[in-house]
Each structure stands twice: as C-alpha cells, then as structure tokens.
Image (cartoon, rainbow, N blue to C red; front, side, top):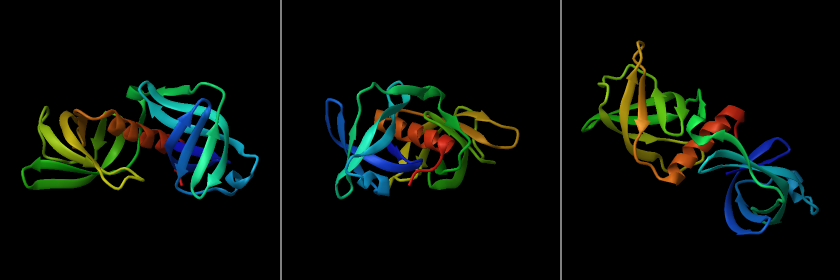
Length: 183
C-alpha cells in the first residue's frame, strides 16, 4: 500500500489494525509526518474490488513506524479488473525450455501485460513469466497464455493463477504508474 502525505508517496505495510487506526511500517518518513499532532494523509491500496483510497491523518510513532487514523470507509477508485496503464516494467518470458526472452511491458493490468515484441510465440501458447515490480525484491512468477499478437509483434499475455497478494501488487503498481511514482 502507499501512504500519501503532501503529494509525496511512501511505500507502507500494515503492522497492526484496530477500529479506526492502522499502524504502518513506512519506507521513509516525510518531515510532515514528524508533526506530533499529525497531518492530513491518505492511503491507497488494492482490495478485492479494486484500487481504494482511505482518508485520514498520520504521524510517526517510532522510527519508520507511522500511525494512520481514519473515521470514514475506503473509497473505491477503480475496479481491479479495469486498472490498466501504459507502463514499462521488466518481464522475462520463457519461449521454450532454456530459452528466455528478457523484455519490457508496453502496458500492464492486474491480470495481464502487453510485451514489446517481436516475440516468436503462437496464439494460445502457455508461457512462464517473471514480472519485476518496483519496490519488490522478488519478481511475480507464474504461467500465462498468449491472448493476442499485434501486427508490430507485440504479444499480450493473460496471467494465469495468481494469489490475491500478487494480483494486488500488480494492480497497485499499475495504479501508481497512472498517478505518479512512490518514494
């Protein structure tokens, strides 16, 4: 998830939740978070229904730990299956056993990618992929199916079985690519 303070975007993970309060581990601490009274903030994250925003206030409570307080329900921003952006990310696609192409996405959505071609693949073919997202140490790996081959050789793949966590990580990366980078 992403904590937004003063138009700055910070990667955050939930450590603990109680009614109206989230304790977050943050990657960095913008100066305004050090205000003892807190500052207006918002969280952006992906839930089962799609990308969401939660408004509230945030302040630092320890080194790289923030408290986020809210008294409203999250707002659905975009349905998860419709989040798509023209974004370049590294992707590896196994063309055949032992033959892997390292390339880039032309656009990305939570359940698939358009990969810059040309790539020698047939429509309907199953491939293994590894998608590298910003802020993640390990790529998201899985099996995908070739769903479209464009005239210019670009190849669209639909990601196969993924965990909700993997799909949410992709959807959030796509959403962030649409609204701006995180710190």
